[in-house]
Image (cartoon, rainbow, N blue to C red):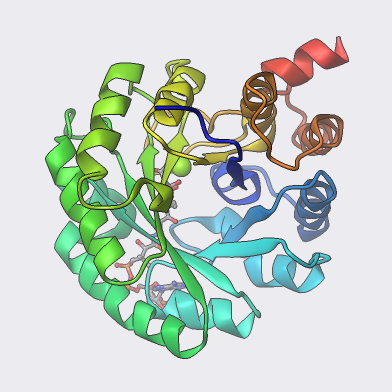
Length: 298
Ligand code: HMG
Ligand code: MG
């Protein structure tokens, strides 16, 4: 299969990137990060989560962040919502696009959402209905698609079944998450081949954490499978609080460098993206997790 001409990057740094941080990060710093990402040309930014603050304290200020960011025309600013309570809070904060998240493994579903996969899907039904009523688009995630920190292997057929349900209930796109970054190019291709039997490939996305250093290879493998939407995190921030040891998402700068080298259009300015990453790394007092950023800044 030939490579796509355009790729959409879903920037998850402000959400997936920061949700795991123990140190307090001010609303002002989060707002600056989102505004810097908008300035870099990203068309889709996941700004925060409307989840239980007991479960993920760092996302507690998401409504304030939404109130203060400068929303640019044509850019999607999205939030995670695990249930109707979260959806209603997001709606009150003026959020126009949300994401629901299920797991490919039962054990991870219990740890992350405190319920079974089937119960999580049932909880999304009223979210989908309310979203439709309010004209809010809903993206779906499946976590642990290439391995689970609690139960090990996850079958592609199981992931496909969950993804199919999310798509059938009205998610316009389903992002497949390698939450612990153990996937390799071979099982990534197989996964998209299996899930792609039920869901058209333009409606699928790849979400790769880089724990084992395989994310760029997995993205290239996904491109060869006709996937053209990828989630990434500026400066490689992040990890999931319910997947111990999982490192951040693949760095957006590194994905952009790969795509630029392939002549694939994204609309994103690499220098401005590096500036955005440096800004949040200074706030966190942390080295930049993007190898491209480190090389450019050396
Ligand atoms: P629960 O404790 O079973 O919830 O948690 P509950 O319905 O029994 O309610 C208990 C309390 O939580 C109540 O408060 C509710 O009001 C409150 P209390 O009466 O005790 O004061 N509550 C909420 N508060 C704020 N917002 C809400 C909300 N819902 C209930 N939406 C729940 C169930 C789903 C809420 C919890 O498990 C939760 O918040 N989980 C989210 C975990 C999370 O955010 N994980 C990280 C994101 S997923 C991820 O990173 C993976 C991804 O990147 C893809 C990948 O990498 O694979 C997307
Ligand atoms: Mg993630």
